[in-house]
Length: 234
Ligand SMILES: *Cc1c(COP(=O)(O)O)cnc(C)c1O
Image (tube, rainbow, N blue to C red; front, top):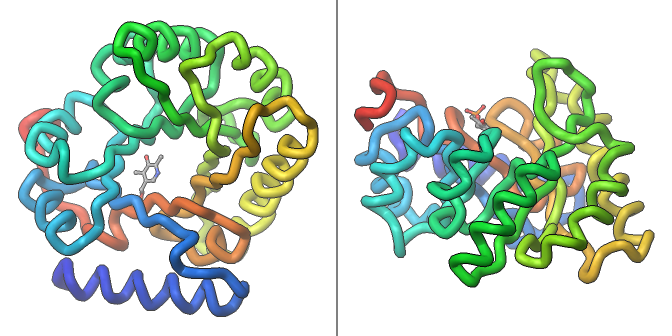
């Protein structure tokens, strides 16, 4: 399948999911996750008009960032070690994986040095799987209260990863729970501004996520494919 035909296919599936759920296509931002593809493919994706790029590890993202900075919006979607914050903050426009106070502190300090604000998604482990990062749903409220001390961090929404299901429909309760959690938090008057965003939905389950209110879908394989590339040499 060519890149163009994949993009067309995803676009039509997004439009159908919007139609089914009465949503507007322009309320959903596609993030092309380029972690499995080369710099050239990432450039081609941007040329085709998808200008939001997601990467989950800085060493692999570096070459793509160098090649596309200024032309694409960068999203850091992977778990972030505190000692990598200096590489990521200032280069990535959004961080999708804020899940602990020590990380918030590191991001805040770095952002203060650079005199910037960092829009962040709070990662929530809705499914409760041991292997997944993220705050437990009941930890999110106290976490937001603690975040008030770090004014360089702008909590703009919630992010989750659903478990892989061979029947995508089975992910629906996870996405619905994330949306309900966001809505509940917005009613608690603990946020300066309401959180509008929901970063949820990947190749296998993005249509269900859109039907449940995703505002950002993170699409790797289904959108840009998967190539044989060596770590760190991309
Ligand atoms: C890799 C990755 C994706 C994209 O995965 P696909 O299943 O290939 O679409 C999305 N989100 C996160 C956090 C990822 O690590």
